[in-house]
Amino acid sequence: MKTVRLDGQIREVDDNAVLGDLIPDLSARYSAAIIKETHSEESSTQNIRLFTSAGDMVIELTQRGSELFAAGFFGVIGSAGTGTGSGDNGDAGAQLKVKWSDRQTVAFGDFKSGIVPGKKTRTYQPYEVILGCGGYDPDSSYLIFSKIKHNADHGADESGGVIGVVVSGRKIISKWNAGDTITGAERIVSKTDKSNSFVTDDRSTPLEDGMSIITYVGINARGYDADSGTISIEASESVEHMLIALKKNEFSVSLSASGFITDQSMKGGIVPQEVRDTRLAGTVTVRTKGKQSGSVYIYTKDIPGSSNHTVTGNVTHGLELVKLANKGCVFKVETVPPQIDLRGMALDDALKIAESHGIKVTADTDLTAGGESLAKRVVIEQMPPNTIEVLNEGRVDLKTVELSHVIGIKLDDVNAPRTCGIFREVTGLKWYDIGKMPLIFKFEDVTLFDPKVSQKITINIENTPKDEVEPFTLAMTNDSRKSTGLVGVRSVASKDFGPTSEPFEATNIIGKVIETEKIASLKEGDTVYIREVR
Image: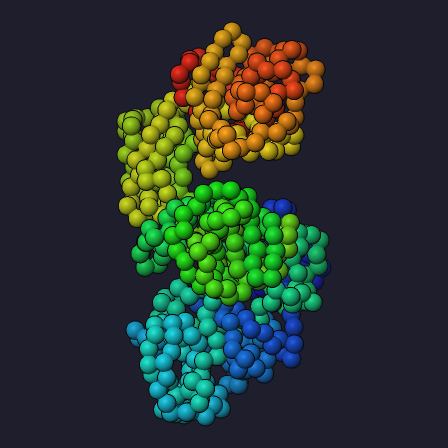
């Protein structure tokens, strides 16, 4: 049998086990980070992961901290490679327990360190990690975590004893109480340290003893603290944009640079600048200006704040997966909280989702009606519109329509990716699971919609028909005609004109109407609601 660590949890696997045996439920589309065991002398690093009973955190070490880690000092809480081993106190896999916790600090210990106390009061910043001792006795040393800025003499050496700073998992510090423990530590690879670490979607990759496998990245949204129950709406709009971009629970790496990776799936979105802050390793932002506006960034090293970025969250798990990810890599993401967007749902399903979050619901229909009645209504609007605001207020008001007024469509991204993108943007399908557009003309077999495409948007010729347009084909007029941007559908085939009644060369085919029986009941002036059938 071999011992590996899967997302921080120790697992035993067969000697011939491969990656797919360990993660059978992870989509084959997603990559995982593989970190091989290294020896102590190879482990000098600026970043380590600390395993605690309240969760994992990442610490960026100072030079002194790196030296201590490489020399095996952290053996008091587990070996550098795997988080399990013998420490200076002689106990295999020893654990450090909370010794005290007050308003300023929380300390773990005690243990022998050999430091020489400087006997001076110092100023410490929030999230700094300090090696100090009690009663100036190095045989009673402690690992001390600073909660707030404060002045104190922690029995540290002349340098002040700061050996690192917590860069991810900071909320864990406020969770620690008597009985909590630090159980182990392991190195985290740097952006360029790939000799023993890599990302892969190859499920046939052999597993080796001591490997660490990271399968997802956890992100905590700015302004949301599930443990304390506190919520701030300071970044509610930009956080919602991030949640929309990650709504498939995946991050697709469009660009991998020396200090960050980006997902550009929502590039072009208009996002307000709500929170400017230092972008530490693990910080998540959305760009607010420039060609990449709307793109989501995750940082792999510390960078100053920028007026072009708004902070939307921080990584709580899987920073090493972020650091190893290359362009084209797709990995799983779990956000806290998950997005609460009820638009496009059947009303009965929306009520269940709201109830699971403790959200009170009001609506424009009788909520006491039977389940079948509620299942036939679809949510088209919600107030407040954003997840953080809904959670903050503890309520949501829903606007609905009959299911018969919502038409299912299927878009052809393979042959008309740009025009389908424009269609989603102008109908709202880019952001929500339901879109809308006004019906402006209906005559015989032709139905025309005007989703109001901006004159700034260019609709190039794309996926024009060749010989015949099939019934219920969905199309958009391209820029070769004055009626650019109109969307149309025909109920019968045509060899002469497209669904918008334009010649074939002016017609971009973007998909098909699936629920064709609903077209006949539509009337001029109606607002037509649509959702994609996948």
